[in-house]
Image 1 (spheres, one colour):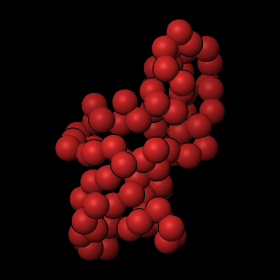
Image 2 (tube, helix red, strand yellow):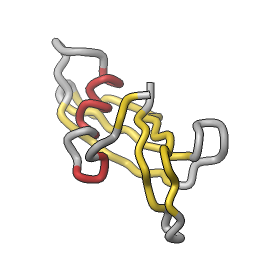
Image 3 (spheres, rainbow, N blue to C red):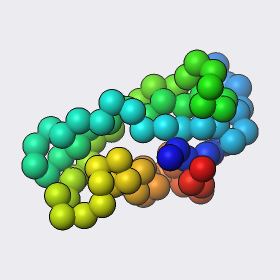
Length: 84
């Protein structure tokens, strides 16, 4: 699972359909998760972006990885991102 979105690197290069994958997820507490989002041109090449996020976690809901992707879709930075 990953998200696909047009992104701009820190060097100003626009990457169409960048592959954004949640990695390194860990439970901070019973109600919080922390994770990284690494973005690359296709999921096979080295990442050009590596950002850390945290969000609320519901033990009675979907698995934590799905909850992380769901949270990302609420952020302006991932507006319009599509599942891939």
